[in-house]
Image (cartoon, rainbow, N blue to C red; front, top):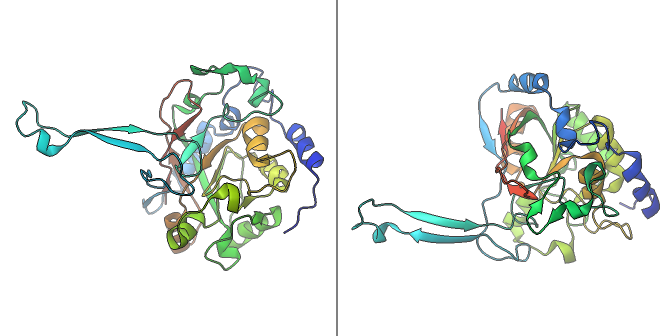
Length: 308
């Protein structure tokens, strides 16, 4: 679907839909401030059956077209090595580069810059060789618990998935709300399914930088801002790739992380959650997620949970 916006119009939206200063000039939590104690308490009441569903991909330890930096998993000690030791045990070592297009992770607000600034006007120089002094991932150390809303775009298009490069427009989000009988509200964690995980299971991985990814068109930024979402999650990178806007590689990343202060979940797997929601006949649930407490970190691997 062709866009009706120009690159200059997209760039203007970053300022128009900014949350800088909304919670004070020193704020580093951004849209997480929309999740109040009352919001969490109301969300908890959505756990009707108690069924829990993981929305994370397995940590991938092998390279693939969309995973040039797989997780390093080494054994420190195996079972056969431990039999004659005073304390028999097994142990391992993980090393993860969380950003990219393979691991399910939460982007911190210091991850992306626009014109040398991150969220709330903090300078890019606040991120140095020892990590981020502002807007690091540990601002979410107490976890993210709220109402989760899944908008299943392949469902409304009567498809198993939408294809790489396809753009999700605001009208698609409206159609999904109507089909699912749900309205995205302030403080929600909005999860947008493209079916990427299912396509990958059927066809294998592909290089998103060359072949594209389905995702939101930049015209959806006002839609997101008006609803005051707290977190945005995708089974891709939220952005449609390529973006179609010259000079703006990932407009959704810039518009959410930098302008609105909305943390992003990338590379989730919503297939099981989609099936569970369809069985339950509702697309809202308790959303639970806790990033690692990595002070000065720019991201964290995560395992988001839907509790129905």
